[in-house]
Length: 521
Ligand code: ADP
Ligand code: ZN
Image (cartoon, rainbow, N blue to C red; front, side, top):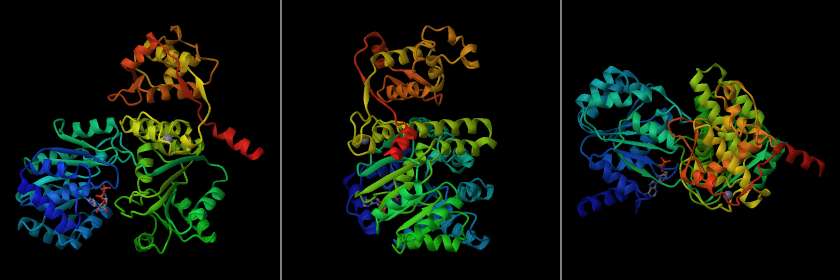
């Protein structure tokens, strides 16, 4: 990049946004898209993704299209940009005919720098027609994980974006997301036909966040205690249903906590007022469904509580990511019960089969995370494809370690089972082989004839599933990126079968037992 270009970008950063420096990869990313290269940005929430397309949009002649899935999010960003003196608009279903015409006219006149478009507006023939005649510089696809059925937020219209961009013109694309597991990343790149894109992936580690999981037991009491201990601090409490949101908000209020509800069933005026009250610190706590938070920028949220077990690790990570954006204290507490997992599974029963199976796998990952006594951060980062060798020392499992046991034989047996079943199955199936469960899958593959069949029957399925997951975290196994849920051997795994060595594993939580002991005290 030329020095002049560099200086110009820096000036714009200061002049328009008031910032002195770029953060992380922002400058590299911005230059990449300015140079018309396809760009793929994976950055955790709050890291500053928006600037990566907003600033280049200002530096290029013409209009950048921003595809964004949420109307509220669009409006937020457009308002913010307008306040900075930038000409930005959106096109979505909330606009009247005449407003749409005005936006189109301004865009065709070359005055609009950023045009936010909802995917369902983008797919309309008349929108495509109009965009073809405008001078478009590049296309930004925000929340790009919506492309993938394996993300936590699949939007079918997102699948049509590539075809539409091709109809508009030969345009560079910048896709951005805060949640991309390796599987989702592959899906996004394939679907957008940007295998050759420059990928900028930042670390997902949020060192200032403390992760904690507690069994759902006396949950209301625990919640009140927790919130009272954090009196005056900003916090979000996520619940799964609107009804629960109302109930918990009320519970907190009668306990002298300044709490307000937020969910899609509330009148939009009330919803907005409650959101504003939270942002302006008239309310300390917002009790919300997951509808709350996308695009909300409150840097000093001190705690995020999941009152109900979330549907996926991606969702959980995204939501916990709203704590401590300013880099200061951030506590993430999740209440967990297997009943919640079963309830969530029931919600899925009317979905099409593949979708249901996908959701189930995501739920199983969630349950495994909660049950596991391994460092939470290690598990989370591993889930997002990031290696993290040591334990973090700043999560409940690190601060209150569970007993460990010598597991050389168990690890070897588990690896053998994966190897002998030809690396084509998931953890449940391997577990069934080890415990000697003769179900229809096992017999149809003749896996009951394997030497490892039933070799681990002294332990239960939960034990073996925990061994396998820990072995996965230690990279003796890896996830098959093409086949969700399937685990494969790594070289390290093969080596271990040949030359085993002592290795310690951690005993999982048994929350029910823990609760019982607690009651006996
Ligand atoms: P994301 O979309 O990645 O969740 P945002 O784009 O909303 O994050 O940015 C998060 C916050 O960081 C915003 O308040 C934004 O203004 C701020 N921010 C972004 N880039 C910079 C920068 N270079 N310097 C200071 N603050 C920044
Ligand atoms: Zn830890």
